[in-house]
Amino acid sequence: MLSKKTKYGLKALAFLASQKGKEPVQIAEIAKQENISQKFLESILLSLRKTGFLGSKKGKGGGYYLIKDPKEVLMTDIMRVLEGPIAMVPCVSLNFYEKCDDCPSEEDCSVHMLMLKVRDSALEVYRNNTLADLIA
Amino acid sequence: MLSKKTKYGLKALAFLASQKGKEPVQIAEIAKQENISQKFLESILLSLRKTGFLGSKKGKGGGYYLIKDPKEVLMTDIMRVLEGPIAMVPCVSLNFYEKCDDCPSEEDCSVHMLMLKVRDSALEVYRNNTLADLIA
DNA sequence: TGAAATTCCTATTAAATCTATAGGATAAAA
DNA sequence: TTTTATCCTATAGATTTAATAGGAATTTCA
Image (cartoon, rainbow over all chains, first blue to last red; front, side, top):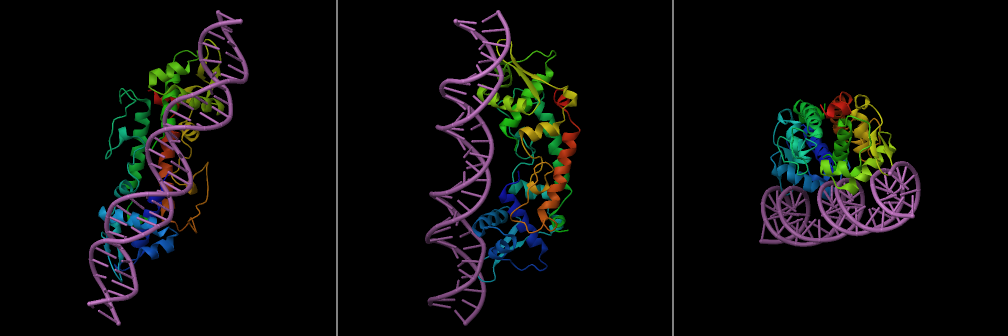
């Protein structure tokens, strides 16, 4: 299941992408428009800023804004920052690889191959969609 | 992420599918072979029996066995029983549909369409794989 | 210069879910 | 009647997620 953090993060990014100008949008406005707890959203936007997706400005007239053109932002990158690994098991993850402690061998693991296929199918979707596609 | 329950369940099913004969296999043996907590596995196998995947036999020489030919068991069915919805959000789930309380309209939801694509891509994998493919 | 607006940051609590264990009941076999 | 194994329910423990709290830092603007 998609975490609320990811869902809210996606909605916020989509909201910002749908704004015509590059004026900063305040947390409060996004939270209100998208039905999100403001404090929770605050922490999500903060992490999106720290990971290079958003810029911010303090004080009156401040808020958050997209740094890149939505067409240039791949869903793979967004998902990895918000949700974490795209793979369902660490042993088939490209960016978050970890060995399973209960498996003697990945070759012989019945779960491994299936999860590899699932990962690839998800990757294909995320690689072929950008932030711009969210608002189309 | 795949839950341990699902991972263990898949491994147990694959183990049973790899057995030549139809003799029941004891929980203890599966647990040992697959490095799974026996008590935890017990509850998983029980649920797989209740959902029609496994049969069981009590007493000496007892254990669990597959009811169907592994080639006839779709991964979609297994995953839904072990892991739950294949979709990442309830609003795009075929078998576990639920409306999102925070979304005024599914049509206008930026997350909805993307998650539909992800669901379809996962479904394609699960529909084209059976329990038999796990041990190939 | 100072008040208001807004993000920044850390910590903490609350809730939900997942993992694992406990302990006995039930049934079959020898 | 003893042994073996599943059946069943409850619950404890651990982890993760969701949400809140409260003030610090920065910017704007009168």
